Image (cartoon, rainbow, N blue to C red; front, side, top):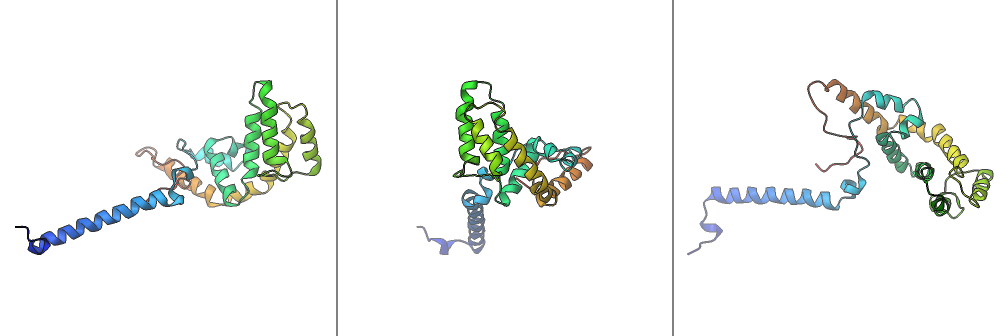
Length: 205
């Protein structure tokens, strides 16, 4: 006849409680990873190859060097998002993609989409442009070419260069990458780094 838990030795009861406690802890960690937005896969900023110390140093030389590198662009995007001003880099990236369009028939719909999203006075991600540039860009859309956003893109680039880029270089988004790349270079002979942009990719404990 089964005597229930009361009939088990004290050592068995203790082991059972330990197992239950560990399972509970693991379950809580699993639920935390699934429900905590900070650890969501969607929040991963970038997955790129290990960045060299030389490359990270180049990012401090110019904004062009920074955003021409996949990992540098992702780090800058994350910084701007933390300042609620990611519309500037989003606009710049959209203009770069627009200039790669090869079929003339696709220029007009894409140009209108960029204008409505970033330049129109009712734009959801309106960028800071002077009225003259805004009006000129609007006229360019009558017969859109791959250069119709060049002036507006240049203005936003200079705006980021003089303002947010300088703050980025002093932020943890850049400084932690610089430290990480330096440490990786020192260990290169005996060890392989397994983390890419570690400070930007959240991981569950």
